[in-house]
Length: 256
Image 1 (cartoon, rainbow, N blue to C red):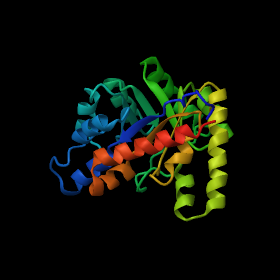
Image 2: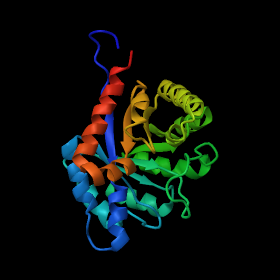
Image 3: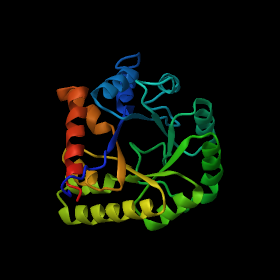
Image 4: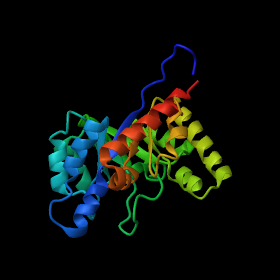
């Protein structure tokens, strides 16, 4: 980093979906994802992310009702499929942001990015209504030029780059593949910024993989959830988030 120049701050959005997954495994009210959101804010989260799936496998409508009321003054990022049902829920609650994601009922988690280019005609009226309601719209996409162009054409203000392939390659110690994906993410973040889009990133990030992503200057926010909830079992949510925040800051210091 240039001496005397402060690295741009990188926001952390904490996804609380899998606190709800644990709750739903047995039913009842515990552990409460809203309490997790409160603890996340106290630990330094800049926002809360929650994915209301069509099958309600983790986050529930009641959870969204409670989150929409506000947690520590931090913004809610509502992840959702591009359906009429979810659009109606978003327009009713008016979260700070909506991130449109692909969704298949048979998948364990979100697999890959949204095809914004191929789904342009379906997505256009949904994006238009969200923007008209003054909700920031993000598209969860792969780091591919045509997807960034499509996001801009649709009128989205934000793109969230899918980091799953990068994290998977790291986990399999396929460092050549990891480096290739990382370079695509870097190039994509620059392209998106040049198009006037705000750039976020997320999916699969861990303590071992976050620093190189945090070192990409154009990325202004990371959304991380499953790993933090899993790590919280061993060290607590506060410690897990603070450690992630420290590593994100470390990555930021590497920006030259």
